[in-house]
Image 1 (cartoon, rainbow, N blue to C red):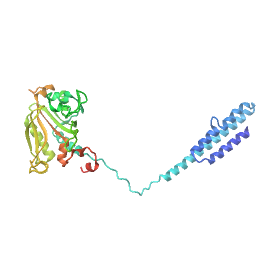
Image 2: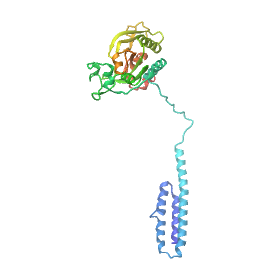
Image 3: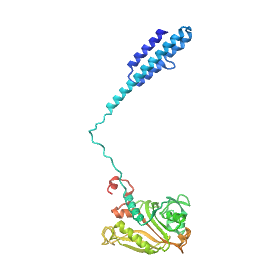
Length: 339
């Protein structure tokens, strides 16, 4: 048995020297040291040895196992190093080659204009308020004094999820939620996405953006509204910009008005952008209707306020001379990088 153990050791050592890969070494380990390996089979035959031979053979067997394990470990380190060297040769990097240019992110034109608008109103003491895009009919219509037969409630104009849940058609519900949670004075703008059942074309989109504003306090008048919007227009479009209020009707404001600004392309002279009129409509506004204040738990005899709303997409298109709203949502970098 001693000669048999010596033979196993020699064969294992020879096989280890010829091994070229980790897979070869694993096969050698299993063949000689595994549960059914040759060394294991020899050790199982020790039960047939005499009491005098068993300790001697056991010692030799342990020495053989240890030598094979050491040889395997040394071979593994060598193979690992060889494989690493081969990999390094294949993955050589030419440090003299020019590096790849890192492309930086770029602000979307809608984001640029929204940031400008936010800065202007924050400078006037406004805070930013946000609300859910999936709204209730109550917050989107009822609390805003919209009559049951108002056209905007129709299925052809609004995306309904259920009879009582819809995709908001304006950010005005944020005003309702704010007035119900906060006692005056209130001074907020509420930017966000809105949804209406419009066919997609150059000037309409079923998804668009609005920025609305609300001020509630004692003694608020139409003069405060006109002064606020006049200052806003001058800061956004230029210090020479003038504003004009035209009578209009909105269910949630009384009196209501459409607000025009002098064309910032021709400075009121008349051009293609303003269709020769010298004026451009940019938003709707008015004094908050007493019914809306009552619905939100605010006494209209004590408090008054004004509200306004503008389409961010429209303002952006006017500011940059963009003629097709679809360009804002197609994510074409050739378009976005111009801004």
